Length: 481
Image 1 (cartoon, rainbow, N blue to C red):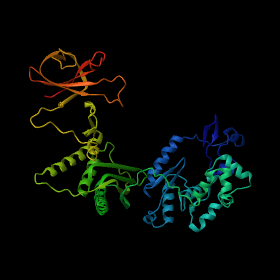
Image 2 (image 1 turned 135 degrees about the vertical axis):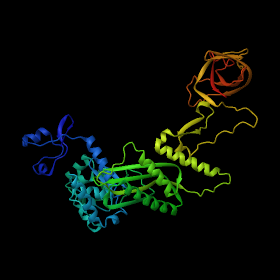
Image 3 (image 1 turned 135 degrees about the horizontal axis):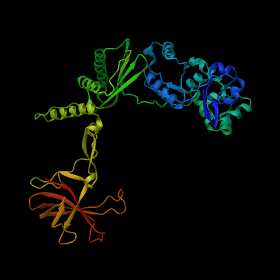
């Protein structure tokens, strides 16, 4: 494999035959061709390699939900609690290698007691299943570059006559730290499990997860739906023991040819019933832009509760209001799944006194779970509303005529129509939010006006004559009816 490094074509990877012939990673292509005229090369494509690694990570989810990328060419799988699903470690390793070999890939792997040891043994030794009793001996035999330390420190260790991990692990820690820094000691401690080095899973670890592994891949969608119904029962039995309901559920379909398809469902309230979840799953499957293709069949189907909330029993009220609320929530969930959560919106109050910022449209699924502030109380019975039914965004400019500066207008022209004011109420003064407005923002005086035809408007003057603001302007911000 060849890539351009430091303005020169260099080897970035070599196969076993080339390595035995003396070629090595980082060697200039001209030097390699000087030794071997007929050299079979391929240009590296890091972007495609990264995409392939992501796809392999998705495929590896069939073995454990804890999969981390070890870029540029490796994966780390945390198999804690998963080995019993495959019988034993030997069968698990054989299954991984067999499936990847069928896709033309050469794999080297290792199972050890910690991620750092497994990574080093897989990259710098034949790998395999390393027993706990034999692990230290295998690690001691590793070359120094398996520690992934700086080249200057590596050269210094070699000049001192040290060649293996075992040669430096027996040395005093204080002397190593003083000469080579803390990184070398930390790498040693991680390698031998004396220091925790947790992996970072690329996906959220589900709270509850159930799956079905088929002896024969499923092709018929009727069979797939039957498995989903059964898995939904299992999932909710687990959640009921925790007194929780599912807020986000992810369904994973693993195809026999290695392809993985995931479908996520978010709900506005904790779901605790199988029939509700199954109805939403069928709704989601029927509205996919890219329909679910069984291909050669699904050999694993997984249902995972990614996000949960404490569930509470809902007591039905005598006036059926609770039932109506439940039906609305169900409708919101179905519409969000069918149309997309970004298309089903709900007004949410915002803690601000600026009228056009007082309401924010958020996805209804999200808005139902968390309301930042409560709506302001409405007008007293018998009084007209303080805010109009409809707001214009942005406010529309009007030409106002007034008798006294800083007072309500006597008449104004809006959209080429003159309105003569008979009743006026105000002003309601609203100052700009100084922490977010620009320096030239002006204070507003709002008035509720009624013209001689009974139409009511909400207008404001931007700027105050009494403060000497330059040329205050009038705007119509809303209408009441």
